[in-house]
Length: 343
Image (cartoon, rainbow, N blue to C red; front, side, top):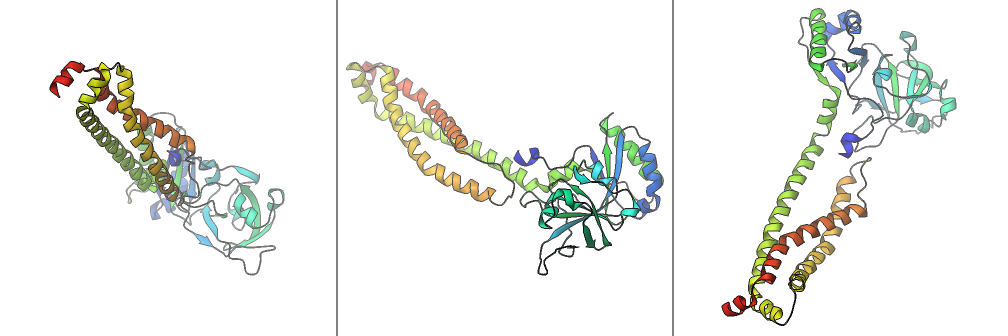
């Protein structure tokens, strides 16, 4: 839940990702022009790789004041001028790329500015040398997740390109049926690129695949938890029935001596509450340790506070009382004459 609702710092909804190939390279201008004629298409961008886990890292960037022994790793993302607005990545200062004239200029994120020792006001215009040559920082974006949530946000540099990468990103406006819009997009690609099959995915589906393991673990954990609770309830009902049967004579005598049904129920329930309390004392520290060990692998993670453990404890107490309550009430309400005669 935390992962699926996390603000990534960019939009992942209603974006189609299409792989680049030789045919799209040759006809990209015509494809882009036709796509822009569709009312449901807001923008088209080119990007170098999967935005969720940017694969290229390097220590090559050179800036004024860089320490001689610097080993800071920067993520590198190649994209065109449409990419940042298409992904709705926020600009904090400066401007976006405007075209080929920015081939040797760069955009950095807030984290990159920090590790370079630049404040936001003076980062724009700073000298920066990378694989595209010596240039200037023309803009600073807000930080966004450029890696798996197991890792922190890393310094990142955008380099301008129109063809050095692997994906086209098509932002849909949300008007009209998605299936119909995708069919229109497919028709345009197939018209200009008939030699290659039209293969696409939605960016949010790419995100879901990135965290498929976590989703499976979550579902399995929930399933096994439900099964464990059901088995525990069956065990409690059986134990309560056995206890009541074993103490039939005692209950009959106490009732003859004036004990109330409620008092007998409380007496029987106290044994189970004591067992429950002992299990909490043993189980909560173990659960706390295991949960924190699992979450420690993630730089960005939800916080499991004491309130969560209290709520779970109260829920399990309610389940325990409901499980043993029926048998306790049944035994306490029985006619003492019958119980003493049977004994």
